[in-house]
Length: 136
Length: 112
Image (cartoon, rainbow over all chains, first blue to last red; front, side):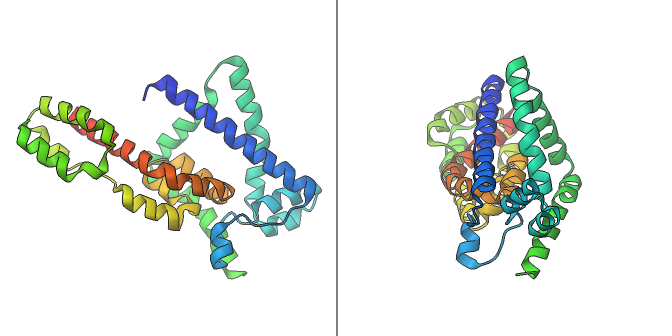
């Protein structure tokens, strides 16, 4: 695939994801949803590592910082990203630069080159998952 | 490369590639040197059927994406519980095409 096409596809997907994520987060914060979208959780009762992230985000926004940590620490990762990334994306689109694309691909290339780094990145998520599995 | 060898390879490996790319692959292989055959045989191709099974059972953890080399997407899929369950289902349909695309890239790299 040509690079220009790759870049466009990246931005289309990024916009789609951030819009969907933003709308979902907003919806949850405003309407205090508590429904689980985990198909696997609803079928087997086992939570995935990010179960409760939406609730955590909602808790942070409402000021319950401790409750958010308890629901899912990943909320502290997801919320800043949900806030920063749309602005970064907008800046890229307005300045017609591709900084988000290049950062993403450089990060991905580095992670691919060094699987040790990837394991380091994924281990907190796995620890969260093990903790979750033990507290259900 | 020897046409018979090329055709045998293509017949036994047809499931790994997109049908509409087969003619192109055949042409590239026929024009390639005989010595490349060993490289071609040693390319690690991912089975699309296996990937769709992985997608169904471990898709919400993003494992299917990790296996096709989309590390970034895999991490995002993991953090969002399979994109709130929606991406998890969408990927059932996308993963086969993506696997075949990956196999195609790997083969082209081996042939050049």
